[in-house]
Image (cartoon, rainbow, N blue to C red; front, side, top):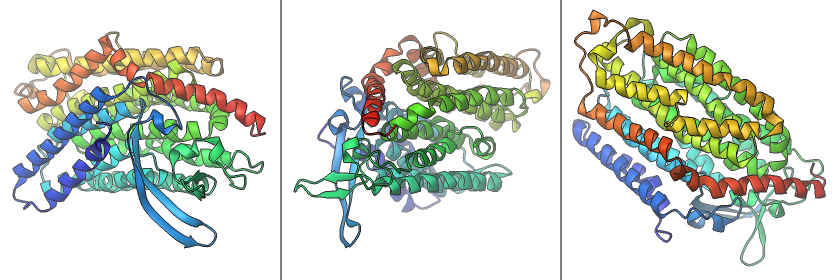
Length: 534
C-alpha cells in the first residue's frame, strides 16, 4: 500500500460522492442515502487497511521518512516575482502515529453519522452533498503535510458546517451557525497570518541546489531550513515567533474549544441535527488539539516549553468550568455539549506535561472522546426523535420502558466518567500520570482531578433523573431501539470496551511518534540556547 495513493483515495472519495449526488435527481432520496452510506463505508474499510498496514516502529517529527503512505508532487509552480522569486506548493500527504488514529476516527464517525442522518426531513440532496464535502475537509486536515494544502482543507470544513447547522438545525439555527462561522473565521485569519510569516522565513533546497520559500510543514519544523532574515526565524534576534505561536494557538484553541473561546459550542450543538453534533464532537474538536500538536509544538518548541504551564492552566479551567456548567444544565444535549468542553480539557492537560505518558494520554483521549461523545449525542438524538423534548426533568424511569437503550446509555455514561475497563479510564489515567510526572504542572494536575468527581456527579445525576425511578406514564409507549440505531451504537460500544480492555492496540500505534515528539522538544532547547533563541 506504500505505493498506492491510499491517502488521496480516503480523502477525495467523499468529494467524488458529492459530485455524483449533484447529478442525481432530488426525488431519488433513498438512492442518495445509500450512496452516501456506501461511500463512507468504503472509506471506513480503507482506514482499517491503513491501520493494518501501518508500521508501528516508524516515527519522527520533521523527517519525511518517518511518515507513511507519503504522496508528494509539485502542485503549483509559478515564477517571475521579483522579490518573492518562485512560488512552489506541493501536494504533500502523509500520516504518522498521531494522525493515523484520527483518520480512522473520522472514517468511523462519518459512517455512523450517515446512519444518524437517515431521518433528515428536508433537502436530502443538499444535506448529503454538504455532508460529504465536510468529510473530505476533515480527513484532509489530518493527512496534509503542506501548510497551504492544510489551510485549504481547514477552510473547506467551515462552509458545509455553516450550512448544515444553518439550514437543517433547530429553532435558533441561524444564530448558532453565524456564531460558529464568526468564531472559526477569526481563528482561520490568525492561522493564515502565521502561515504567511512562516512561509517567508523557511526555505527548501531543490534538487538543483537552489533555495525557494516553502509551505512544507516538515521544513518549517527543521531549524536548518530557516533563513536568517525571516521574521519568524529562530536565528533572527528580533523575531516575532511568540506572536506567531499565539496566533496559531488561538486559532486552534477556538476549535477545541478552549475557555474563553468556548461559547459557540453549546449553541452549535443544541441547534445542529444529531448527526452533525456527532461529527462536531467526534471529529471537529480534535482538529484544534491536533493542530497544536502538529504545528505549534514542533515549529515553536522553545515557546511551547515556556508556555506549557499556561496550556495546562487553561486545560484545568476547561475541565472544571465545563463540568460545573454541565451540572447546571436542564437540556440533555447542552449538558453533553458542556461535558465535551470539560473532557477536551484533559487533552490540553496531557499535552502540557511535555512527556511521553501525558502526550500519549492526550492523543488517546482525543480518540476516546470522539467515540464516547459521539455515542452520547446519538443517545440524546434517539430519545429526542421519540419524545421531541430534551428536558432532563421531563422524563423519569425510562429504563423500565427502554431497557436496551438504557443499557447502551449506561455504558456511554460510565465510559465518560472514566470507569476502569472502558477506554476513557486509560486515557484519563495517562493524562494524570503524565501531569503528575511533570513538576511544571503538578499542582494544576492535582486541582484538575476535581473533574473526575464533578463528571461523576452530573452523569449519575442525569442517569437518575432520566432513566431510574418510576416510569413517567407520558412515555409508556416509547419503543426501544430500532435496527438502524443498533448499527449506530453497537460499533462505538465495541470500540469503547475493546480499547478499555486492550489499550495497547491504539497506544502502540502512536508510541513511536509521541516519543519522537518529546525527544524533539527536549533537543530543541539545546539548539535554541546555542543560537541565542531562548
